[in-house]
Length: 236
Image 1 (cartoon, rainbow, N blue to C red):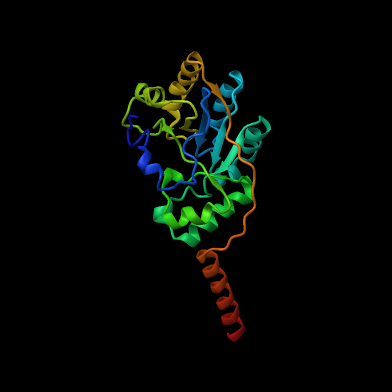
Image 2 (cartoon, one colour):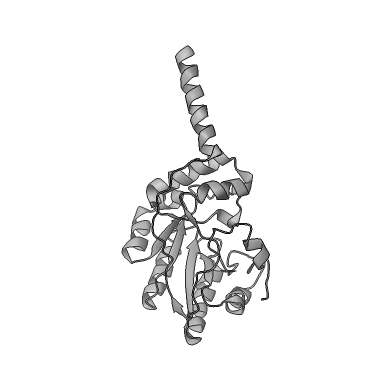
C-alpha cells in the first residue's frame, strides 16, 4: 500500500496506538468524512448545507472554545444528525502540553461536547496520554488527511490527496477552519462528487459509550496531589 506521510501513514506507524481507530472495518465501499477545528461561522454552515444537499452524515471534531463561542452552530451540527467528537478545548497539542493540563483541557471541552469520541489535534499524543484517554474515549485518528489547511499546496493537490489514497473504510479528514477555507470550498464538493461516482457511500462515526473505571498511575497522582493540597490548606 502506498503512503505519503502528511496524507496517509504507513501501517507500522498506526500500530503505535493499536486501540485507536485509523480506518473503519468492513469491505463495503463506505467512507467517513470528518471535519476538525470548528465550528466557525464562515465555513461550518456552508459545510452543513453541502452535506445536506448530498444527504451525507459526517463527524465533526469540535474545539470546545469554538462550541462555546458559537453554540447555535454546535447545536445545528447535532440537530442535522451528524456526530461530534472532542478536539480539546484550546486545540492543544499533546506532545507540547503537560499531562494534567492536557487532560483538564479535554474534560473542559467534554462538558460542552459530551462525546465519547476524541481526536488529538495534529494527531500528536504521547504514549501515556493515549493509554489514559483510551479508558474513557474512543480515539479516532484518520486514514486520509486532505491537507486542506496547507497553504503551500494547491487546491488540486488537496483533492488529489483524497482521491489517490481513499479506500473502503477510509476516515477522511477535512477542516472547517479559517485556515482551510479556500481549499475546502473548492476541494470538498469535488471530492464528494468523485467519491459518489466511484460508488462510495458516506457514514458518520459512531461507537457505543462504555464507562470504564479510571485506575491509572496518572489518576493516582492527581488524587495524591489533591489530598496533599487539602492537608496543606488545613496546616496553613
